[in-house]
Image (cartoon, rainbow, N blue to C red; front, side, top):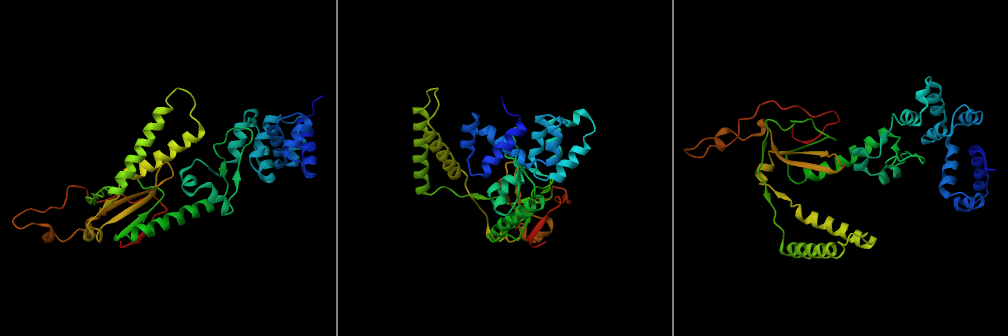
Length: 311
């Protein structure tokens, strides 16, 4: 006769305390290691809720939903707040327990990286019973601090290029550059060595892709090589920009995080107050070259803005 899930959990926990591995426990009880891992996860659930489950006060799916968080106090608070039957659905419980957390797919989490967040002492809430897209980051202030520090470091590097100012934010309001002139940049061409490398990489990529275009699964090592080739090719295709140093001295940049969690730098914006005097931009016998067609007022960025350099 199969053990009750709660009895399984207690038996598995006893053996784990004696030093047995999840695989050893699974073999003893003729279950998969995944079942062992899930039952042991019930150790994170409040004993009060385990007792309610043992008395048939909730079903197993509901109990497992509480394992997404480790705070027994918070679990008990959520359970006490469930006054309607529909609120006891697992998805509702998980949503309540993770309401103050940041999902791992959030662009801020992707920008910092889970490894860096965990290394800084940040807790991760995970769900072993349903797909959780990487879990939830429980320490939001820590994440915000790590984001700010990484953006600040990036801003310092951009400022060192010779710009007058740099503004930093996770994101900016639409239209934040209205009323500003954009400098024209020269695209830096690839060197002879880079051109040769680009040709070699492209040829290898095309050869591997053609060899394995058979409709069958691509071997893992080939798939990894194609991914690496594509990444290096993309790096060589994305060319840096070169600006006039005198123009850079009156212009600035915006540093932000894009939707994929990647750093983005928008370079070369001149504010109206930083435009050179009119007589400096009027060629002899000509007309002014500066663009005055845009509105004068520009929306300011969202909260969290930081500035480097001139105002």
